[in-house]
Image (cartoon, rainbow, N blue to C red; front, side, top):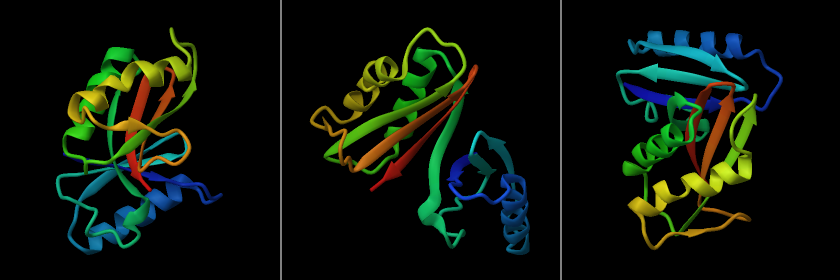
Length: 148
């Protein structure tokens, strides 16, 4: 199953936007489902969609997981396995709810998942080539990759 995050920074209703995307895909005989997670639409399909959706610059590969640190670490490891190698990266964490960690601590602790794949990569917090976005709401988490 292919999973994509569509980040909506506008004021448009996420449900309306998700419905519009699903209708557009079904006209192309592509079947997918979506769910809303915070300010993100998560689109799932058996087909690769990055070539199909015209505005794919806002379509990011993603993965759903739990909010435990080891689950996030392993999920980042799986996402970067198929990612385009970069010179540098940053992990951005946005969380809501009570957790055993703070955002900075989590980002530092799960960065090893990237170093496992690319030992020579560096961290650049100011202008990274790759942002690994981690959004946690209570005990659920979505992680997506965003290239500059």
